[in-house]
Length: 243
Image (cartoon, rainbow, N blue to C red; front, side):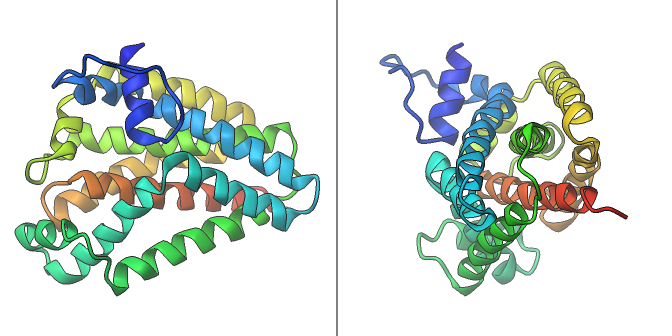
């Protein structure tokens, strides 16, 4: 359970048992637990959406966005902003990308990326339709799948420079990755089969990072998680339409 505690500390701002004996390989060992932490975040978001839906869909969407932002401490949004700035300025140069991404200042592209991501999530949560048990279960799965996609990238894309991204990649366990995919797939078949789209998003993201920069860093993982959440929420909304 140590890996789950470390993963929760790294990905969220949720209270966890204190670890006094921090080890150098803790983050690496925590990597396989990232999808499980995603499910915890998803459960909190689903609870917020349900509570907000007792008032109206707009409050439900707002509550969901607030819950995911507070639970993660905007960690992945920060990665999205840094990645957007880095990609805009790097012109496919990995060294330049890292230089810009590590700059603590957020540029115009980063700000725009955050605004678009938050607006997209708000609009998609508002468009989910009736908030029933199956919808809430599907929302939980969205956050598990998004972290699973990040882990799948870690298993197939080399690290870009040194840092937490490299440590994370070193700890990705393929057997655990497969096991989590099976669990998420079964849950998705029960709640919303359209979420199996995640299995297609993963190789597309892997191909993108390999072609664009030849590797990925910690900010790239955050950006991938944010993008995956938007895509999977969009899949939920589209799949719920009466065609």
